[in-house]
Length: 172
Image (tube, rainbow, N blue to C red; front, side, top):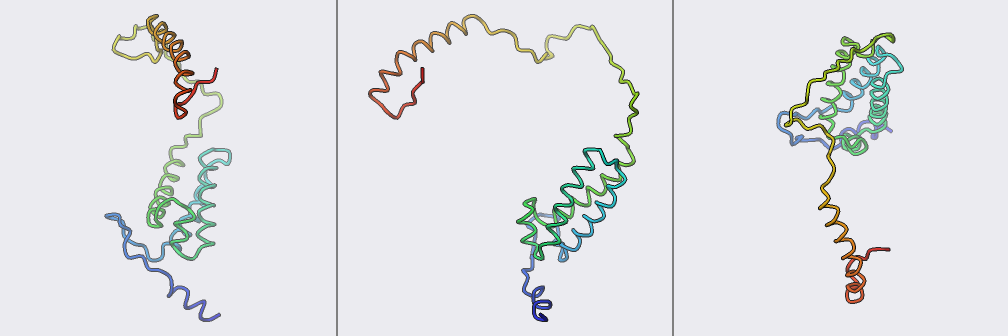
């Protein structure tokens, strides 16, 4: 029992570098992540329960927190989460905490039910260089060429199939 409690941290692999310029190794990354994820779950409580942002943040944060609590080793955490290195996860968690504060400040879900958005109708003609995202009809030549190719391929493929079995065949 004593050897497991003392020896396990000593036998754990020590990360030398992240391999990412400007991103230093965090020796106690697991503890930092657990702390950040716990703070995130506390902070997100200020967002209304029915908001999608809160549901999404709570969902992935709880999952990540559980993985960090279950796994002792940073390699196992990285492997199970599959979201990068623990140092990157720390940066993401810090950014999420910052964003939660800003979202609370901005209050995007605080639009009153009786709010009416003003619709601006503009009858000005659209300049010719601006795409209207409505493709026009194809020229008749396109359809004639397509029909010719289809009828031509129906007559040629069965003859070709008899000589070569590696060519794909059209089903009729």
